[in-house]
Length: 339
Ligand code: NAD
Ligand code: LMR
Image (cartoon, rainbow, N blue to C red):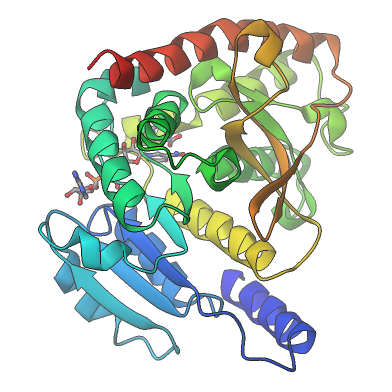
């Protein structure tokens, strides 16, 4: 389904850009040897908008690259090991980052902070040096903190552009669509749910009242659905029983996000994805980063949509989200600035 969607879009784009060769788009994946990195890289190899794929990891990337490079699509694939990040990033226009450790049962995403904060800071320093203008999509958890960490490193280096930095929250959107469709007996492709806030527990706020198929879900069924969306990650962590967290669905979601961004970078208009960005929506309440629907454009963020009309329940969910989100963001900011 994904591949045929890509194919349709590719045909549409080919028509739209008939007179010139389509833009060359080098995409780098940092953490490409991992549970998310591998399937996401495979899906990116199937995306006709990716012309060159640079797979970097501190372990295993050359092997993954050799394997994926045999897939007979047009893009070039190269693998880069620990000491070769400069070559991986040189000329990259989009960098997707799933590097870092995943959760085990009983852990929160914030429990990953100590390890992943340093990994993301190191990778931000490398990106600031070798591809400061690239679009960056951060998958590494805790997203609510790692994205501000990345931003603070860029600010220190004088290269921060808030339009080009994104926390990837697409998996929450994918899950919401799937779970609501399951309840309603519908095809998920027809079910779109906006998810705002952040990416962990109560900071994940699905706006079901804005979805035609979701607005009549009430009472216990509503509570259970919201809980499942907010804690869908735990479901996978528990089922994997110590072997990590969501990798395959995240690979799918990450590749979808990358495809949306590439379409927008190539000039397609009206591309909207919920994503965690520096945002004015709740800045007056001290929450500088917030996920909402964002229209993407050639230079990244084009227009941050307001959250829109909320139900009473959703007002409550936002109220619960903001204090946690604020804490997670300032933890990331202090990590860089008090070091
Ligand atoms: P994994 O352990 O399978 O893979 C992580 C990879 O990162 C490994 O190959 C490791 O070698 C690599 N790595 C570690 N340090 C690195 C560095 N400095 N530079 C480059 N690569 C480095 O883990 P995973 O299951 O792929 O998960 C990765 C991260 O994504 C975790 O933090 C997880 O919590 C997060 N995640 C986020 C979402 C989301 O919705 N945003 C969804 C699922 C998982
Ligand atoms: C998810 O939502 O699946 C990821 O953030 C991984 C996790 O730790 O749950």
